Amino acid sequence: MWYEILYRVLSIINYVVLIIIAIPVLVQLLYVLFSWVKKKKFPKSENKGRIAYIIPAHNEEDVIYQTVKDCLENQDYPKELFDVYVVADNCTDKTALLAKEAGAKVLIHNDPDPTHHMALYPLKYGINYLINLDNPYDIIIHLDADNHINKEFSSLMNDAYQSGVDFARPYEGALNATQNFYTKACTLFYTFDSRYGSRVRERLGIAAHVNGSGAMMSQRMLKKCGGYDAVSISDDAEFNFNRMLEGYKGHFVEDAVVYEDMPSSFKDTLNRNKRIGSGGMKLLKTKLMTMLKKFFVTGRISYIEMFLTYIFNFLTIILCTWIPLFYIYNFIFLGYAAYDMIPLSMYDSSYYYTILWNTIIIGASIIVALFVFFGILQGLILAIVDYKKIGAKNRRELLSAVFLFPVFLILYATTLCIGSLSKPSWGKVKRNTN
Image (cartoon, rainbow, N blue to C red):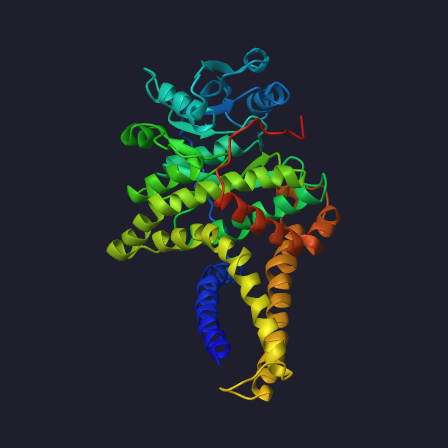
């Protein structure tokens, strides 16, 4: 019968889809298995470079004073060797005034073009200003308006720079790690790449994913590449790709920790992931294929690893569309065939009965294993060994998120899928902490 042939064809397609999905899952499995390797430490240097922290800020009067104050007063680094620059972007509040009162050097950036109302334009403006100074800084570090950093941050980034590193990322923690379920789950998710992926990449010589808050860029690299050359809504990931394709390798400075403000509601989580998903799909179209070609030309693992990581944005579309639709169809067809509710010509009902129950048992086992391993177990390890870095006072504060984390993974994949299929705008971010 035609519907038996259709079932066979769709099943073969589904096997291919599952293999494609399994590849990045296996990469993550390897990271977890090797995550106990000793972390990389860069040699302590007596040489001290000049550091500029740059903070793009649009109407951030609620948090900017404390962010600047914390950075200037709590660093274990010679105060005369680092400054904080705030780029007040189209501000209509007291952001510039409060940043100046806190001790920052303030750059005013007014751009009436509505298509430029996103973080990359003030960041580009500020970085280009800094690298063209008569006495330029050696290191430029990007922070968001709500970020705090640990006191060793400047020293550790300088040690990396003095070791020859031009491009590096820190460990990501959270200011509001234990505020509610969303902040706990988001915190665990973003620290996964720090504790597992980034540590193993650094030890194996694979390029780190340098994006987001706390990214360190050397002045010599920025001068050579012509400044901040990203143009997309996922500008940090794009800048990382550009540098990789030029031959620069990102590094991971694990003991340097940046504490971010995590989304505290479904709406905030959706808005963040819509930007990530949309930006990731744009990079998939413009940069990732070049990354894949670069792997075949050079043979460097960093290129294929980056490709497999960012292809997940596309895979979320498959996970949220093909997988549920196929298995709804699959179980309906098998149910009818297994219980003699439709005429059969290729196989008898006992054959489909066996397939039906094998699919249920194997599928359920795989789902449970994935949820336990990729959700509960990874989260539990993080809560036990890295709770202080994450931003929690004790391990118990994170346990509820650990056991509910599989639910968040479904939410995360769904919101990334929505972002991959949408064109989000860049609005004012809701801040949860001061």
